[in-house]
Length: 279
Ligand SMILES: Nc1ncnc2c1ncn2[C@@H]1O[C@H](COP(=O)(O)OP(=O)(O)O)[C@@H](O)[C@H]1O
Ligand SMILES: [Mg+2]
Image (cartoon, rainbow, N blue to C red; front, side, top):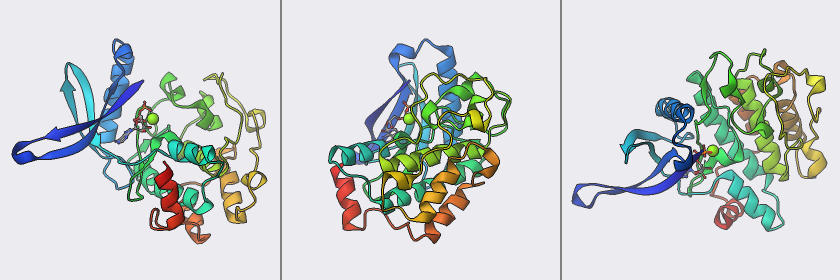
């Protein structure tokens, strides 16, 4: 839907700063709905100010198009990080995956405290800077919590949808983002998604937990042997179909990861730097 460019903002006296520019793809620019969604994205993103969320500098009009101006993140997305490891026949070190998700929890928890649901948490939307800071990006489908449910809630990546997002009668809250974070963590740890791709997800058809495709999700420990029991249980809890059995907040998830000794600074350790360098 969108394209992102690296650009250089220039000013007097040789001033120069790299920024990222995002705009709706040219082929889609005639869609009023997409233009409206893009402005919604800009308005929500503009409110965010946190080290683990990509900073939005402004919204400009360039050649007649609305363009979002953001800080430029000089490192890979977690999707790319993971792809490089898989290409090399490796999995991400457990502590790297957990440290990424712990930082994502800080950013996402902040977003939730602003009253916003991100609704597109995925490896593509977690970027890692060259100094090891994880930044949540892309408010393209984000909504104010408590907004009435409509078709727009079905936007995003179905593979990361919590069951309640497919149910028009359900009230979606921050725990839908926690489910998506669980899918992301599962994927970072195993290289695969916990349930088969849901390609034909239909919005509006209520499903109970029992009917939910792929329920219960497989355990991370079934895919790799070096996963501590606390982490295995945490991922399983993030992925339960029943909202009320999931962790309630990002803080709760982060606490478990820290208590299990799975979080450390990213990039300071030789092993972690090597993964970043391969990306
Ligand atoms: N501020 C940024 N700095 C560097 N790369 C970015 C930035 N924002 C987005 N990207 C890159 O562009 C990709 C697409 O941007 P995103 O905002 O996620 O758009 P889309 O709505 O198309 O998914 C991201 O996955 C990331 O790789
Ligand atoms: Mg994206």
